[in-house]
Image (spheres, rainbow, N blue to C red):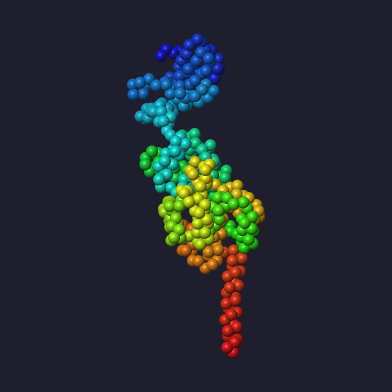
Amino acid sequence: MSSKSFRFTYKNVRELKSSTKREYFHDSIEKDLLLQVTPTGVKTFYLYRRIDGQPVRYRLGDAEMGVKNARGEAVKIRAQIMNGKNPQKKKKEFRQQDTLSQMFEKFMAEKKPRLSHNTYDEYQRIWDKDLKSVFGNKKVSEITFDSIKRFHRKYAPKPYYANRCVMLLRAIFNLFIKDGTFKGVNPTTGIKFNKEEARVRYMEHSEIERFFDAFNNSDDSVSKLAILMMLYTGARRGNVLRMKWDELDLDAKIWNIPRTKTGKNKTVPLADSALEILLQIKADNPDETYVFPSETSASGHLEDVKRVWHTLKKKANLKNFRLHDLRHTLATYMVAQGANPYIVQRVLTHQSSQSTQIYVNLGVEHLRDKLNETVNTIKLIGKKSKNKG
C-alpha cells in the first residue's frame, strides 16, 4: 500500500486535498497512524499494523475526532495488540452479537412450553409497549446497568410496571447467562425495585347492586356472560376467555384449568350460579369447542371484553375498578363469609398463601357486618340469661 508521510496537525489534515483516487498518509510522529482520504474528500483515521502476519487497518474515527485523539487511540489499540489482543476480532464478535430483539425471540421460544398463557401474553405486551423501542436494536453488550436504571426511573410513577419491565430483562439475561450464550454480568443486577403497595379493590354492597342493575339492563352478549363468569369463579380473564367445554365436568361441577399463571393445571369447583350460566350457553351452542366462542378472532374464542366492560362500568358508576377486581371482589367476600385463607387460595389458584393474605384485611363495611354478627350473638346470649332469671 503506497502512502506518503508527514507530521499530522489540525491544519495539515484539514487543508489536505483529495485526488481522483483513494490516498493514504502516515503520521511522521505516530508511525502506525494512518489517514485515508477518498476522492469525495472524506478523511478517516486508521491504525495500520500487522496482526498474526496479516496487514490490518483498524478504523479509529473520522478526521473530526482530531489528531491528538487519533494518536491517543492508536497508542491504546497498539498496546492491546502487543498484549496479544486482536481488536479487529473484538469488533467482528460485536457485529455478530445478537440484538436484544433477537434474544427476546429466542427467550420466548424457549420459555413458551413452560409459561402460562397469561404470563406469555404479559411478557409480549411489556416487550411490544416499551422495551422493544428502547432496547430492541441494541447489541446485548450495549445494554448497561445505567441504561436500565434510567429506563426504570422513567416509569417511577408506575412502580409496578417499571418493576415488571426490569424483571423481564433480568429473566432474559439470566437464561442466556445460564446456557453460556451471554458471557458477562446481568446488567439488571443491583437495580433497586420500586416499592409496591398491594392493591385490593372490590365492590362494596352498593356497588354490587349497581353492577347487577347495569348487567340486567344491558343487551345480551357472549362478553356479558364471560364477565359474570369471572365474578362467579374468581378466575383470571385469560383463563375464562379460553375456557373449553372439555375442561369442564358439569356433573361434578368442577373446572380443570390448564396451565394457570403458576404454569400448572388446577382443578377448581364451580358455584351453582356459574353452572347455570354454563348450562344456558351449552343449550344455545352445543357444538362449540370454546365456552365463549368468537367468529372474528384467529383463536376461535373471545379475546377481550373491553367494550362491554366499559359500558357496564359506566352504567354502574364503578370508579377506579378494573376487570381483575372482580376476582378481588369474590375473594374478599369469601373471607367475609368465613372462608379461611387456604380455601381462598385454592379457589384463586394461588401458588402461595402470601398472595392470598392481602384479602384478609377486610374493608370497613365487612368489618361492620362481622361486628354486628358478633354483637348480636352477645346480645342473644344476654337475652337467654335474662330469661333464665
